[in-house]
Length: 412
Image (cartoon, rainbow, N blue to C red; front, side):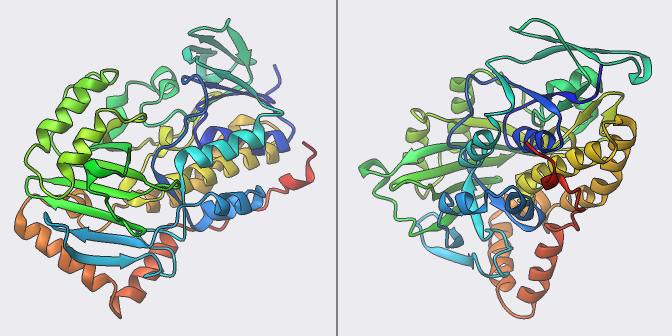
């Protein structure tokens, strides 16, 4: 079987981005996705550095800007709502904690889906259940079994299915071998402003309130009027919970934040009826190699950096561009292409996986003193000379010299 028939597992950001570039290089692409349709909504993600460059090369920047969320910056508030520190979006030239272009994850995923739907086969409401390739990745292809569809054979299989990747589990081994938890759990959902929230006036700011015990509550603007993207995060050793039991996850969050001030009680009530509630642990995915034979990993499945770095979207977009480019340059020789993919991406991934100063403790301080020190630290970040130093660090973390694979020369 020719290696130009590729199966991608995952229709989030990385999967459709890879499909876009593979189709430009003349590959036949199928994407399988567990959800019944592209997932709408979600939280905002950053388009910065090389990730923004990839979107520009795809010709999607104008549409991304048109659907971006207007966000003035990050502000820390106390239990009464008083601002204790602010970091405007332009503090570091648009490359800071809040980047120049923020877009809802679902909106970006939709743009990528629409850019690929005409010439990419999508299998929604399905997933991979088995991967069989010859010893050492040899043979002439990979036999894949699905939960719903009939078994099929592909030249290559790419796992772009997130930190809990099914492809990684089937081809590389159990999750515990590759995911390094940072002992933080987070919940995100959409709320809608109204009397119950006392008409929260975000005024374009991403507001965040910390409470002792390693607790943080946040609210940031959505794209639509009155739409609020709410978040609850907390520090904890490993927890045992059912990833499919949403009500039990909401109960867990409600117990953790039962006595927290600010807008917490109203946001907890909104959580119960949210259309897009999401709960998960934070962790980094680390592997010595992102390929096994004819199977490779992309984005969070191979190198999740955690939301604390703000670079997950850039890693997905850049990884997709590089992987497709190397497969095109190697004329489908997966051995050569996967090796070059690792060589080009490894330094960028290593840099992007460096957590911000303080790591999890800086995001969710445990004590009142820790919260005050973090507030003081943020205030100092926006002042010269610290501002200039951090601007250079943020720009470097989000950037990489992208090779020119000449994919635009290939007809679609």
